[in-house]
Structures are given as structure tokens and as C-alpha cells.
Image (tube, rainbow, N blue to C red; front, side):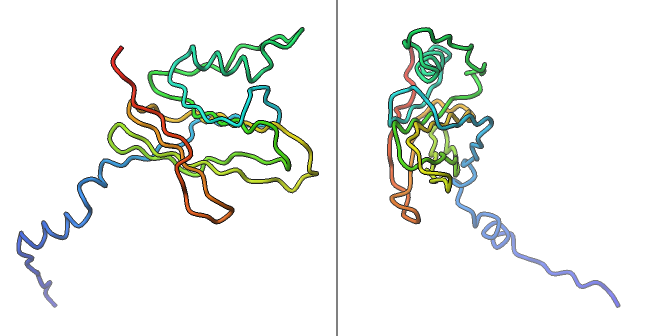
Length: 168
């Protein structure tokens, strides 16, 4: 038995190879590289922030840890290289019942990013809490859009938009 060779015209091979839109090849995942979350933030909320510099991170960390409260020592914030990462921070203010923020997905298209975050209520005893989550993700210089679901199984909707970084 011999091997049969099939010839595909070059235009057909190129059509098959180019079935994926060129734009799709520029989409890269933005995973959560580090996650800090809990139920007791002193940062006011609810709020969503994108922090791309050490000064902004130190300011948020101070508020989060109770800066301004009497006799409160503020530990040094975790260190990040802001040339490579940015922090997506979400604070819930006082919430009832308790829950956690879950980083569903992040993706970059060119210099812009789309990040999806969901709040999942816990099955623990219902107590008043101040939940927070800080997600370190790969840095983008462009616009960042944060989406949250409109309900437990609802469609994703834009919650907040952050402009691209300008030239200083």
C-alpha cells in the first residue's frame, strides 16, 4: 500500500490558516498574578481602582490598613514592580451578607484591557463585613474597563472605565 498525497491549492490553505481574525491574535490573557482579599478593609467603599504606581498603592494600602485611626501602626505594603504589574483593587464598603471578590478573567487587546470581577456571597454566618480584593495583573498602558455581572447569572456590564496613561 502506497501513501496518497493530497494537494491543496495555496489560496485554500491560506483561507484555512486565516480563519481566525487577525485582531484575535492580539488578545492576550491577563491572569491574576497575586491576590489579596479579606473581609475587613478600612478603605472606604464601595470603589474600584486601577493603580499603576507605587505612590497610589501606598496610599490605598494605608487607607485599607486603617491609616488615620488612633494608635494604628501601618505595616509596609507588599512590594510590586509597577513597570510590570498594576493593581486592580475593589472595596465593598459595609456589606451584608459577607462574600469574596473573584477575578473571573482579564484580557488585553493591544494596550487596552478588559477585566471581569464577580462578588460571590459566602455561606458563613451572615455578619456585617467590609470585603476587599487586590489583584496584581500584568500592566497595560491603555484604557482599562472593569465589568461585573448584572445578577447571579446575568450578562456582564461595564462598572468602571479608567483612561489610558498620558505622557507626563
